[in-house]
Image 1 (spheres, rainbow, N blue to C red):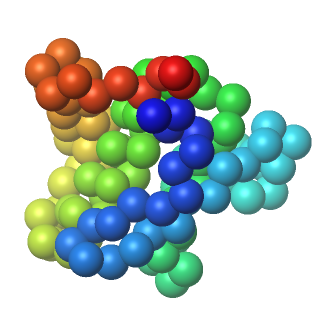
Image 2: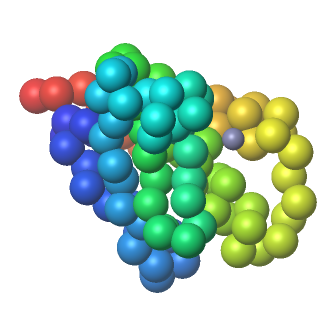
Amino acid sequence: MNIKNIKSLRIFGQRWGVIWVTPDKQESLLDNQIAKSCNYENNIYILNSLSDDKTFEVLLHEAIHVVDEDLRLGLAESAVNRLSIGIASVLLDNFNVNVKEK
Ligand SMILES: [Zn+2]
């Protein structure tokens, strides 16, 4: 799969649109971050110029924010960061997940 072809994620039965942001729109759409999730729109915005591995990790990061909100876990940003890195590593190393374009 080419991760950058993903149009949406399904999280707890809800569809989250994935909006790919070009670097020239990073300031206006992402407040100069590399990604964000918008609960009002059910959209995840992500910079389209990240590497495939980083994109996978950042999409997981935003998905973990959604799970965190839905389950009211109250995770700190640093915990979300570490979880996304850890879960990405487990999925890439064990579950035949391939984020590179074929
Ligand atoms: Zn975050």
